[in-house]
Image (cartoon, rainbow, N blue to C red):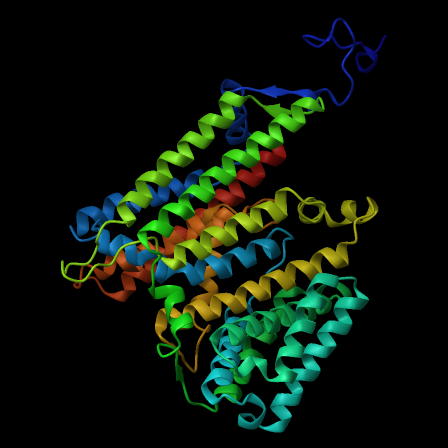
Length: 476
């Protein structure tokens, strides 16, 4: 009898029955088993977020020595507002990077969409303030995006853009920051549909398409603003996105919802899997993970609810809105990627697009939806950037914004080669990116050139880890 036809030994607890080829589906993972699995991932060349976390710790230690102001509550409380836009744009880029593609226009898409929102609420009459050709070009562009979305069965994206068109045509986009911001994100979704169509259906490389759009959207931004920047501090909602905090009570409520939701969801999932005879984690493992998350959440929330203003007569406390936005989007994106059929198809397409196509996955649809999400996140990231900088400037979203956002995703652990990455990577990477200028800024004698060099070295190290781990995983 050949080696391939030998009978495998009975599985433990199987009563002597031979295990099927799906025996791992009934695996009961304990704390020890989880640790062994994690070590196995590291050995196989999948370090995940470990390098970025270690790099984050090293940077914190270094900057704590550089300035005694770095670890103050006031400085730490400012970090989310300074880096939320990088995390949000980076999260959108994760979806595209998972496919092995790139979107060089995410930053300028954000600037163009933010300029659209600012112009609408600043003038109160977008149709009257803009030249007719610009207004109707916007409408026609969004209608074309809807048609393409319907054709390629990107129903959700088409529906979102359709709502945006309705808001523009009815004038609701002019009625305050909330309507304008929502419409700007919907416009971003339309940009993503068109970009995805050019990449996935027409067949133009994503690098070329998005490089062209990177340049084009900068020009459109100047048309929208009429070459005049618009401040955002007068619009309360817009200003608060990056500069305000939850109350202490709502900070604790937010932490309770996040921790309780995680524990409740994982317990329900594992109990359901156990009843169905599927793979599941031991209750002790679930409670351990939940306990660690709860401990971190309690410590962070306690510190956040302390007064961090140097003036004791003016209280500044609570979890920053920017952190709430980034964490909430990270949770939503994680669920979409790991708990939906679409998410599994996205990973499969990124791992091997041809194999995914032969398995019956609509690769064009997957790519279009990924670019749609990326551009929508880019639009919202532009809104956050305008809140952070207090204005929609003439170069909003240009410069290093895209580079920092891509760097955040890669530094966090997302592979440039596709198939590997998580939304949390962008959040962790954004922390690394924003800590560098923050820490250096506390030492006035260190020029901006240090920021550029250190950021470049960190990105190069992250890319090297990605390439080395990929080669190692291919050998195993």
